[in-house]
Image (cartoon, rainbow, N blue to C red; front, side):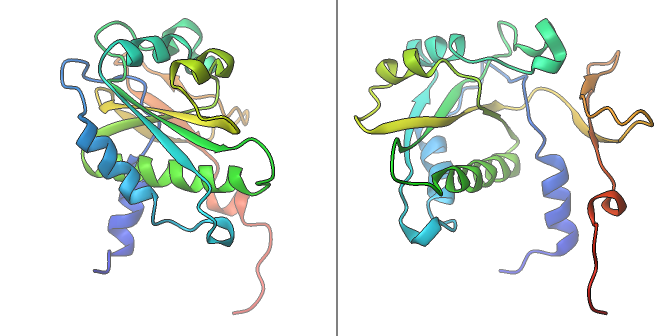
Length: 199
């Protein structure tokens, strides 16, 4: 069924990185399976479908994996979710350690698809690169020959996130205001389009 351009753009604008979650409303394994089911049908380099996924719901493994992640460096200590606002689930994206040069692109496509799908449900998603992979691999029993390019922290969203205009000084750092609203500056369309050819 076609989605209107306006509706899709609204979804993309709403799908901001989330770092505050409703911890007493955890996502279920079925929720995570639905998210990966959305990602599995996305484009894949050569259609090789090399990615694999490990699903982690609320519990000891989720708590330990959280301790192995680093959140929002630009916000210093305020970036890490506090007790009661931590993610209630994770999806670890796995890719072959060798021989799959295009796997990082597949991981990016899958991650964005999961973030968009989560947003349709009122869930938040944080795509995390900063993770202690040496400790996470045995914790998650990652199969031999696979790496963890990205980990996604998930849960019912608890914070408001908005797009802001790029400030005059060009700083791209995000920030929170006095009400806790998370502002994410974005460059203008005029700045990003550097060439046009045709009518």
